[in-house]
Image 1: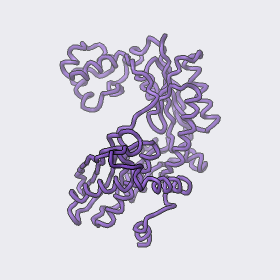
Image 2 (image 1 turned 180 degrees about the vertical axis):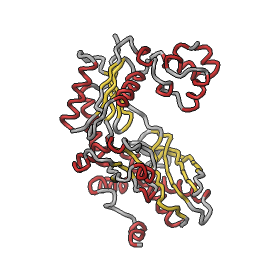
Image 3 (image 1 turned 120 degrees about the vertical axis):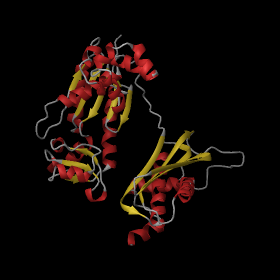
Image 4 (image 1 turned 60 degrees about the horizontal axis):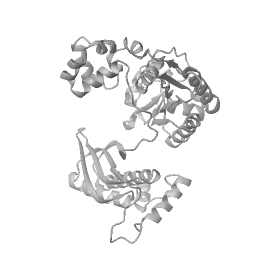
Amino acid sequence: MARKILHLDLDAFYCAVEEQRNPGLHGKPFAVGGRPDQRGVVASCSYAARKFGVHSAMPMAQAMRRCPNLIVVPGNHRAYSRVSGQVMARLHNLTPLVEQLSIDEAFLDVSDLPDSPENIARALQADIRRELGLPCSIGAAGNKLVAKIANNIGKASAQVRPGQTPNAITVVPPGQEAEFLAPLPVRELWGVGPKTAEKLESLGLHTIGDVAGWPESDLIRRFGKHGADLSRRAKGVDNRPVITEHEAKSVSQERTFATDISGGTQLRRTLRSLCEMTGRRLRKRGLSGTTVRLKIRWADFTTLTRQTTLGHPTNLDAEIYAAALELFNNVWPEGKRVRLLGVGVSHFESPGRQLSLWDSGPPPDAPLQKTLDDIRERFGSNAVKRGSQLEQDDE
């Protein structure tokens, strides 16, 4: 039986949520992200802003130059997470086979549902619009590869009128995968980045169909195992299942400073704050890791990463900070200007700290940590602060 796979992508998700919070933004060029005078970056932008060449990951200052009337809206990730949860709940109501890729994107396997992929997609799109007021686009095909590419192409080719979003539905019927992919540029194929595309185009392979028709043995000779993947994907073949649980590889937080920082006190305060945010995210997801990683970027954009392995898995702020601080002290020369700091935890083991023969119970900080998490969850991240943070606020 042919599979029926949907790829759903919420259209300009952050912007759609902000328009719900402030209807006055509807139809206007605006971007969600950091301030242009503080090295802010565009996290998402409205389709009205895209008409001016604004796009995600662009420096906000550059976006302002392209669109002088651009409205900059600070992000509200708590609101985005809440609305994302509502969307994903509706997907799970439709089928248990949901693979969430990000806050606004997911695969669904609806092979067991009797309706056609197009009817399922249209009903789902209408439900999300009606119940949550959010636009979304959907690609449908017999596998994940083609469903995602179909959605990308459908969104890109949609005629978006002022104040509207693509809200596209693109269906590739069974057996027509290779035919659908054939005229598309090679860069649309998964696994083809700029360097691979350049190599393929140097061989005269400009479309996915060109790659599909090239001898697989030669692709393997030139690209190794990746060549076999390219040949298979170009023919529209993808047997990967929808994975219902995505295991995180790492949890991290980082901060880019508005101006380069050279003061040790402020840098260590920031480092502690990043460790606390990382620890809170770990505990919320029931994760503990044994590797703590520090990321530091100097004023000249040179970036260093250093990591250390602990003797046990942890998700406690104090233990993460102690490890990160040791790494920081080892690499930071006093007075050197820092542009970015980041902290991450990886190599996850079983949730919580594992006990050794000498441990008699949970680490002593665990109950206090849980109490602080509960207070911050209920009253906000700034409900409880350290004394050093209060001193910083008064400066």
